[in-house]
Length: 292
Length: 239
Image (cartoon, rainbow over all chains, first blue to last red; front, side, top):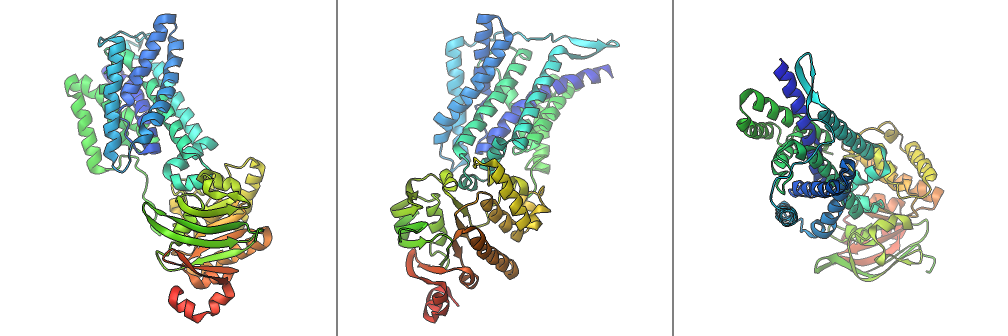
C-alpha cells in the first residue's frame, strides 16, 4: 500500500509536467495545425538561459522568470521568422522544419554550453514527506502541482473569460471568418506560439532538475511522453492534454515501480496504440458537427 | 453618382492566373438592397470575397464611402462599416452562440454599444436567445443563418455583403430573412449587397439587380424590371 501511495504521488508529479508540456503542444496544434517537434529543444534553450542567469546571480527565481521570458521570445521568433513561411499544403512540411529546428537549437546549445550533463538545482527539497512511515510527496512535488495548476487556471481563464482568448479561439477555428470580424489572425497565431513556448519552458524548468540534468537533448524523452499524452487526450483538447499527461505519468510510475523501469516506455506506447485503435481522435476529441 | 456608398468600377479578380471577374461595374446607394444574380460559377461569391479583401483584385476600383477598398486589409473592413456574411453561414461552430455574437463586436471601441447591439440581436432572434450557451454545431441551418446575420449586425454595419442566405433553408425561413433585410433597411438605413441563387426571393426584396454570367455583368436594372424581363429570366436566371 505504501508503495502504491508513493508511486501515485510520483506519477502525478511527473504527469503534471507532462500535462504542462502536452498543453504547450496542444496550444500550437490548435492555433497552427502544426505538431511542434521543436518544443522540447526550445524548452531546453529556455532552461539554459535560466541556468546562465541563476549561475551568474545565484537567484533561482530570477532564472525562472528569465526562462519564461525566453520561452515567450523564442515562440515569437520561431513563428515570425520560420513557421510563418512554411508551406502548409502538406502537414509534413511543418514537421520537417520543426525537426530541422531541433538540430539547429541543439547544435547551437552544444556549441555554447558543451554536450555535458549539468546538475540543476531545485528551489525546494525533493525529499518526500513521510506520514506514518509512508513516503508521500516532496515540497518540490507540491511546487510542481502549484505551478502547473496555476498555468492551467490562467490558460482556462484566458481562453474562456477574456476577449483576447475568444479572438485566439476564433482565429484558430475559422481564420477567414475571424479576419472578416476584425481579428488579427496573424497576431493571434504569434501570441499562441509565444504562450505555448512559455508553457513548454515552464515544463522544462520543472522536469530537467528531476532527470539526469541539463543537456541539449534533455527534453527528448520528456517530449515523447508529453506528445503521447497530447495524442491520447486528443490534440485539440486542453483538458485532454492535462488528463493525458496525468495518465501517462501514472502509467510510467506504476509500471516502473511494479514491473520494471525499462518496460515503462513500452507501456506508454501500448497505451497510445490502444487509445488510437479505440478512439483515433483521442479521448477528448470534439464531437462532430451536426449535419444540416 | 458621387453619393454612392459603394462604387465598383472595372473590377477584375480571380484565383491565380485565371481571372474570375472581368470588368465588373456596380453601385450600391445608402439604404439600397442590390441583388447579385447568376448561375453557379458566375462569380457571385468571388465578387463578395474580392470586395472584402479575401480575394485579391487585379484591376479596377472599389470605393466605399470615399475610401479605396483595394488597399484596405480584410481585418479593417469591419471597422470601415462593411460586414461580410460568407457562404455556408460562417458560424464558428466550435464557439457558442453568445461567443459568436460577442466576436462580432470585439473590434468596436464603444463596447457599451456593442453590448446593446448584442441585446438587440437577441430580441430580433428569440431562438438565439434561448440557445446562448449552445455550440454553433448544435444549431439548425436556419439558426446558423440567423446567428451569422446577427453577428454581422452587432458591428452595426453600413453595408452588408450577404452570400446565399437562403442556401439549404426552408422557403418560410428564407422569406423571414428577406423580410428582415427590408425591415433593417427601413429602420437603420443598412445597405445590402445580396448574392442569391434564389432569384425570386432576392428580387422580392431588392431595389436593383445585377446579373452576372461567367464573371461579367450582363445586366443592371431595377429589380421590378428584371422580374418582368422574360427573355433575361430564361437566358440567365432559369425561371
